Length: 226
Image (cartoon, rainbow, N blue to C red; front, side):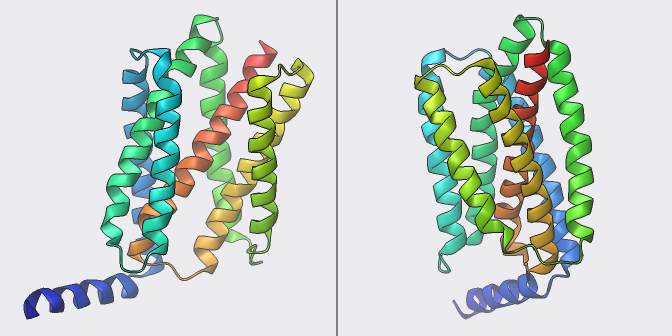
């Protein structure tokens, strides 16, 4: 019992003492792993029934809530963040798969490839900007959150009331801009805030959400031009 307590204390101390470069590298590693897992989910998602879309979407929301609860609860084992990250990436991949299949089916395969390439280049560029900018962008977080809430509300509104092509383009552009700014913000905060190995799952999840959402909004923009 005493040995287990000592091991826990040593692990906690190690997590606190890990250099930021180590935490950043592990976060990026898990970000890449989450993208690979999502790719597997996307491949499987092509075979699923459309009726499963909303249950899977609800599962994503539940996993997101669980991830932030684990992060906020000091008594919760932070290692739980890893299976939650993996599960979320896989489930979100299941929902993205049919979307990509749809675009390929309507002859917009080039838009998919262009959106992915643009997202990758943009992610790297905005990540460098966020990491290098000297100013602490913490205050920008509230503005981005408000913009995100507005975007979600408008998107939900559009699910029930058809939007014009012009309105859809504006929403897609706004979404792409928002998550581009989130990439800058998240990398800036990783550089400016104190982070430990316990933070890796939630940090990787944030980056995954930034990348995937930027990709989906760019995809809508590019596909709309085809």
